[in-house]
Every structure is written in C-alpha cells, then in structure tokens.
Length: 637
Image 1 (cartoon, one colour):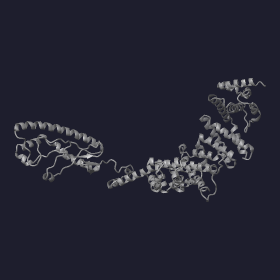
Image 2 (image 1 turned 90 degrees about the vertical axis):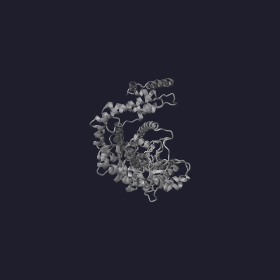
Image 3 (image 1 turned 60 degrees about the horizontal axis):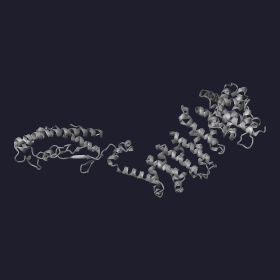
Image 4 (image 1 turned 180 degrees about the vertical axis):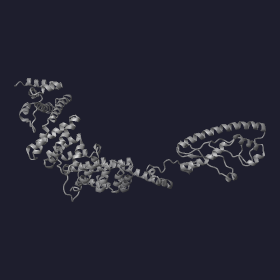
C-alpha cells in the first residue's frame, strides 16, 4: 500500500490501543494470529522518515534454537510471545511507552517466563537430558556454548519462582552435577563462557550460599575454589570476570550468612590458609611496585584485591588479626601507594581508614608500632596543598582519629610528624590534633602521687579517668586548699561526736550557768568565760551545689583544759548584745537592770535559743541528705 497518511493513522490507532494499558487487550494483540498485523501497523511511525521493517526481522532474521527439544506446543508459544513482548517494548515503542504500560508489558513477560520454567521443571526428562548433553560435549564443540548459555538463562529465570519451587529446582540442579559443570567451564573455556559460569554461581548463591560453601569445602582437590582465585588475580580486566568473582567472594565470606560450624570454621580456614596469601602476593609481585616483581598487574585487579581485603577486615575478627601478624598484611597492602594511578593510591588509604574505623585495640597498636603511616604521610606531604581526593582522604583519617580520641594514634602522629604540621595552615585538622595531644599530656601530668597510686591499683578506673573521679576538692573559707574529698569525709566523720555532744547539752542549763555567772556566784568563777560562737566552716569547691558545711574539730582531752575552744556550730548567728568580748569572768549586765528583769529576759532568750536549735537540726538533716548523695557518711543527731 502506498497510502502513507492512512498507514500513519493506523499506527496512531494501534499505538493508542497499546497505551490503554489493558492486560487482556495486550494479550489478545500479542497472540500468534494477531501479532504480525500489530507489528506491521507499527512500522509506519510518522516521526521517522523511513519505514521500519520489523516483520522482516521477526520472520527472517530471528532464529529459535532448541538445545534440548521441547515437546509442549503451549510452552513454545509462550516463549515466542515473550520474545515479541521484549521486542515491542525495547525496539518498537521505547520512546512512546509510559511507565505504567512499560511495567505491564514487563509483568506479562515475567509471568510467561515463570510459567515456562515451572513447566520445564515439571518435565521429568528435560533436565537430565540437559546435563547429559553437557557431559557429552567438550568445550571445543559449537553446541557447548549454547548449552552453557541456556543453563545461565534458566538459572537466572529460576530466581523469580516462589521460594519452595526455587528451593526444589536448585536442589535438583545441584544433584544433577551443576557445580561439576561449572568446574569444567572455569578450567578450559573462554572468558565469555566463564563469565556465564560465574553468573550461574551467583544465581545459586542468591538462593542458598551454604550449598556452594559446602561443595567448595568438600571437593577433593578444591579445584573450583582454586580456579576462582586464579581467575580473580589473573583474569583479563576487560572481560569483567574479576569483578564478578569479587562479588562472589564477598557473598561466600560473609559471616552473617554462615549458620553451620563447617561454614564458620573450616571454610574460612581454607580461605585464609590456602588462598589469601596468594591474593596478597599479587601486590608484592607487581613490577610497578617492586622492581623484582614477576608481572605487571592491572590497576583494576589491585583495586579489587584491596576492596576484598577491606571486606575481610570489617567482617572477620581474630582470623584477619592473626593473618595480619603472620603476613604483614597492612604493610603489603599500602604498597599500592607507590602506583601512579591516583585512584589506586586512594584505595590503599581507604584500606588504612578501614583498619582505623573498626577501632580495634589490636589494629591501633599494630599501626603505631610498625609506623604504617609513613608512606601515607609522605605521599600527603608530597601532594602539597592541592585540593584533590588524596588530600581529602588523608584529612579524613586525621580528623577521625581526633574525633574518636584514639590516644595511641594521636600520640604517634604528633610525635612522629608534628614538626611538619605547622606548615599546614589551610585546614584546622592538624592544629586540632596537636591540641588534643597537648590536652592529653596536661591531664597525664596533673595526676599527683596519690592519683597515680590509685590508677596503678585500679587500671580499669585509670582508663576511664578514674584517677580524679568521685573525688571532691575542699577549700577553706580563706581559699586555702585542704585536700581531696576522701580526706574531707574523714574529717566530717570525726566531727559527728562533737556535734552530737553539742546538741545533747541542755539549753536551759547553759543559760542557768550563765545566769549564775552574772550574779557573781561561785560557779561562774569555776567555769570560766563562756565561748563566743563564731564561724568555722569549710567551703567545698564543687560549684553551687557544694554546700556541705564541715566544722573544724577542736582539741580534745587536755588540749580543751589548757585552751578554751570554740564549740562548732553549723549555723552562725550574731552574738548577744548582752555579751561583751574579752576573757575572765562572765560579763555582767548593764547597770540599772534588776535580777527580776534579767530573769524575764533569760526566759525569753531561752525560748529563742530553742527555736534556733530546731532550725540548726533541720539544716543539719538537709546537709546530711545532700552529703549522702555525694557519697559522704553522715550521722546527724
């Protein structure tokens, strides 16, 4: 037909019908009896200058190959329909489809694939015939590549099955010898076929990685494990095979997915004892790094090795520590800093950052003891003040050490390279690191002999700053330093008896004695002068809450007889206006005061003194409660 306007109008009609996004309509249009007419109408796109020959391509150029004969006609029709759906959404209408229609077409293709895989799984003869042909042909036969390609696509589509059906299918494949077939492929096939084999392994491990670990451990000659390691360190960088195997190793070595003791112990022992040293040796034998090396290693391979070692440091604990001591892991990995590729130098710095990030005491002391920072700091100083990824990577390490206060590394960096930090003024990271070092030195020097003895007796408390924790510094009212809180508490306990004696005295009796002295009786001459109350408290230097009041103890025994002592009081009050200072007899009242008037005044003052006594007791109880919180032992009356 040469009626181009009508043909283009037909294109718009068919396109609009597809864009309705109706699954039942799409299934009808894509059936065997209608699909070629639909594709023919879509050849006349008005946006294109020339006619697209989609029917010719589908009928003449596309060839359907059956590596294993499929006898079910319905399954064959599903396979053809799935291919045409993919061709429609990826070739004919990629620009016109919206997201909803594209998702509907993808869902139709997925449902067809699941139905095909389920039907082939239910066929009792299909899978045994497939593996029989794989065993029959050699890698040199043309049919070998097609069989491997079919097995790869079959395993990839099997991931969309339900869990029970998927578990049954992969169990059947392993039983038929799937891993043995992969071993043959990795041994002698080309890189293109090996890439398909690693994709098969990834499909299996995404379902159950334990099956793969069990096979690698129990295989007699460990052939598959050795072949994977060989392709990882010697594979062509352009093939993409090392990248695929790197992802495979990360899944295999992930301890979060290990459930049995064989996986946790024996499998990891095989990797660390037999294969990891071979992987590490690749860095040492690189001629770009070592002039006596054996080969030129691609930078991508070295980057993958460093990335895998970072994974091991993050996820394996004691095994990677033992390997680090035995093989000098960190020092050998940092040799990649000598490469010319800047991204590879940053990869080595990232490995050092990983060792520091886990904040493990072993790695921290190992890094400082062996001075592994030397190549990193040298390349940093050589880089100068250029603002690039290398500069940022080293600054990030320094800032992390400062933030986390890794004291061993702070001391190591400042003592080894601090003389060069003064030249770096475009960032504050090194100044902050030096300040952190100075603060640590000041704290270390401020601990006295008593604190040092306590720290030596209790190293756990020393690590937590316990040399000065739970101690209170006490100062007198004049500001003189009295001692630590432990000494203060002993003094407070020594005052308890005197305080009790003070409050146990009969108040009225005291004033009766004073009255006798005023009258000039004999008791006044024997007792001597009554001591005037005064302040005698210790101020605690602990902020506003340090309100503990500690009265200084007076002499005891003969000292009290030789020199009059002042009775300790927790609450100060002004002296009585009646009393007069000085020594000798008790002061007499002012002239003109009769004994009857003085007796009334004594009774009034006695009542006031009782109220003051009650106030002092309440304050003492409050001080005892506060001191109980601070750890002091009080015994209030």
